[in-house]
Image (cartoon, rainbow, N blue to C red; front, side, top):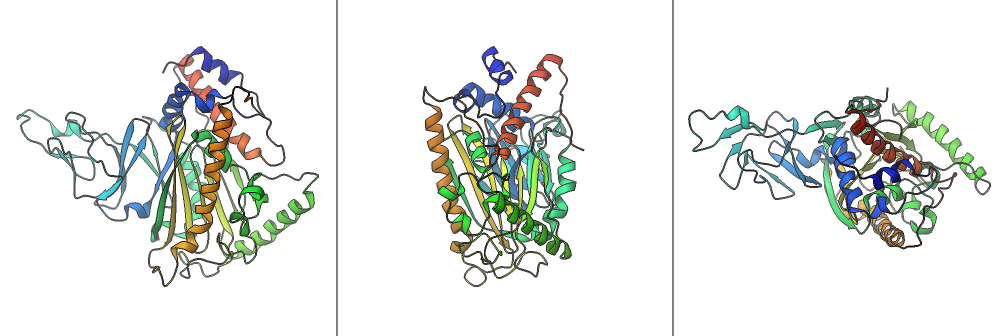
Length: 426
């Protein structure tokens, strides 16, 4: 793709330790670059398996001008295809989700089975070869029930490293044996990078998230000891060690893995203690669902957090799971999709109340959306200039922006050399 000299200069002159220049948040040209390079060539989180629990269940995900169908096939495999009929290009599915026997184009009824194979078409002549007109596949990656896609012809190969590392952490929660309790979409009035940067720190939590801090310690999200809080941070770190030993006795992994920058498929995970009773991310820190996940028997198992670049974060408790997916709509609007999951056999009104499961993150999402919008409006000012990250609380934000700039630099190098320089994490 063509990258203008102005954008190349912005990328190469980015000041480390500071927020990005305003065009990274406002420019339609950079947004187009983000969709093509970041969301078009890297693994992005799009769904959880319970959204497509049965053969024929599908969801539609739009990534820029590309529309993708993610479907469960007849052999219970998760497949993904470009939402484009191979006849004259009509989109096959308009609804965000649904269930089908086959994928049928509404225009001329060309029909594809759930493996993407063209199985029916009329009036194309005896020499027409159906095998040349199957749906175009999209790469699918699955981490213990978290579904990722990659639109690139050759996706970053280090996804398998992330999968192998993360599956032992996530597997005890048995995500595939859950059901969606509720899913909520929010359109945030800000650039997608502001949404991600806001998520990558808890510097703002005390002033803005009273509901969240009923159960979560702020110190687990990039905090380093500072003159103001060194004693409290050390107390928290001691608690992480003692609780980690207890969880290890239960067969649960908790150690931090931090690979948020420096490679194509970047991520971080850690199981962290919760406040008060330490059971779940709820207003009273008690479980919201009486039927625990998988074969878990203890309620106070903390919260397993999992972050991926460029677009997701996830929290796994003993009783429920919350996942978050971020997708750019345009330079100034972002889709945030939140999904709450409980055990598939849990009964609403008996085992759980939706309000208790969702009230913390519904409040937090609303608060964060306001912060993203305020920041986006501020970045529009002629007087905006990049500000310094806190060395004590915003390490993970800087890792996100570092990763982002690294990926754009790799694209520029790729244009120069015609060789994709993707560093693989081992």
